[in-house]
Amino acid sequence: MSSAMTDKNISPALSAEEIISWLRENPNFLHDFPEACDLLDPPRNHKDQGKSVVDFQQFMVKRLRADRDGIIEEAREIVETSRANMSNQMRIHNAVLLLLDAASFDDFIHVIIMDIVALLDLDIISLVVEADGNDIPHINLPGVHVASAGTINLLMNNRKIVLESHINGLDQVYGGGAGLVKSQALLRLHIAAHAPDVLLAFGSRNPELFQPGQGTELTLFLGHIIERCFRQWLNLPPQS
Image 1 (cartoon, rainbow, N blue to C red):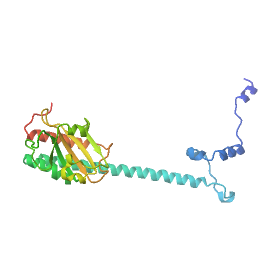
Image 2: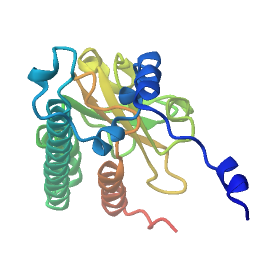
Image 3: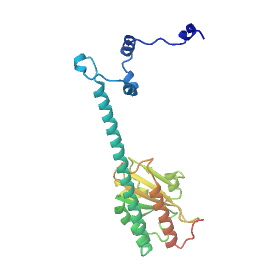
Image 4: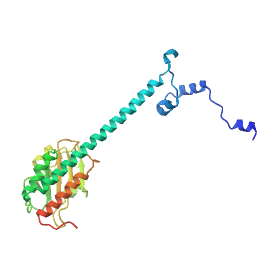
């Protein structure tokens, strides 16, 4: 291959003046490609070179500090989230123990409506049972509300659990305590094949305590325990 052909395939090197001219026309280059700073050897004595010379060392130090602060903040959030998850898990486990220690069916309902409220730092918990009349067999107790057939499915839209924030509580769900509720978790309980639907409602005055997208594993676990306890107290067969 001749030297002439080789020279045609080699791009001419850019001069310093051309590079500076291009950078003037593209002032956001380093902003868009900060990794380019790692390729540069910044001036050591910029004060002797005029006020217009940027101290790249200072820029890179600031960037490294920002990266460090970002990593520290992410680590702090991970630790706080882990602690919160552990705390919630412990609360749910303690709630399960209270349910298992109930001495009677009335005591079991009292644990749900009263004791678990304080344990989970909520404002109200209620049970909604669908029925045709005002009497609910075996569950004519405070904190249990009657709703017409289809109400629960209307609220749940065929979902097992619903989390909502910035809401106003419904009288059909919370009765006289509806005014307290600004966020809620609604959990459908399947007690037995021929038993009416039951809704377990967790309400909080904190409008952001429950939000769509939050993890629901612990709440669903608690719901499964309550379903099984209901079947035992009401002498219902286990779900197939």
